[in-house]
Image (cartoon, rainbow over all chains, first blue to last red; front, side, top):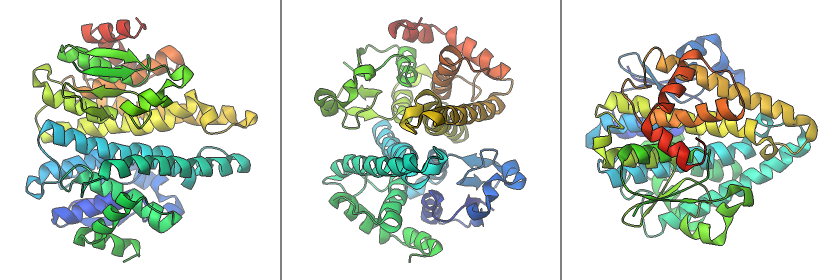
Length: 206
Length: 206
């Protein structure tokens, strides 16, 4: 059976949402970050990158990288309409998804959340945390402008919304910073989706 | 006419190569990162993210994020054969493109090339650079496994090869890392392509 390797509180929650949207049976395999299980020889054998999310598919092959897993789920389940098929719609979806994963998450939130991954110096860590918050806020302002007059980031509901959601989740539930108005509306709307509620239950915030 | 905003030797080279592969007519304009032109009022009016590359299409619409621009070019100009039609290989290509952009580039090369972004502490620059190098080389090992003894990452030439080229160029020409043998061969194979030669010449890197 399809199995999602995930850790609580990570971006894997976005893939969890997409699996729920698809609605086919799947298993969850929890990787315990508090015990550094992602670096264990057993997990490394499965995913040499030592990261989550990783999706083990029915045929046993493993798929990594948020954008690739999300796109594959969307393309293999076209009836769920999670990714437009025209070049414009597809490009806008990937653009919004990449901005959430590459910029908001990896280049911004991570500075705030994991300054120790960059420097061992406590003063520097304090500065990185500030810079991380600033970068998240700047990025969310771009998203806020893009969301004006729209319900979902790339027009219709798509895989890009799952990526924006997990960043919103961190900002709202972990850091408890205010979200800009259109982003807050998007987050509230996401919370009404049954697939998102299943993820929130797993995350313990339902 | 479509237009590419870029700065020589940055990840925009990937888009530059892909544009040359399509053979379409386009304009290009340098945004001088050395004088922080990406944050100028004029450029922010074009791309509010304050980053390069940025691509303006024929219809005047702005497209950002390397994977999204690459995907759009591949889908819009199918004659260039930059993306196979089957879901499985498309997924593998996106997996590689995302890993190259978000991890090897943003987490690895960014640390090694611009350690000051992560620590202004003089004594710590070396450890930031060393960690960046480690991430890049680990990433190149993963790419080396994917490439194996094939000519191109996904069998046929694709947007993934143009993405990998940027890291290869940087690692080999700028910082002199020793890369796996098959990756070095891939780099030379890329350099033999007329489109790559034209892109390098246009950026003044030939």
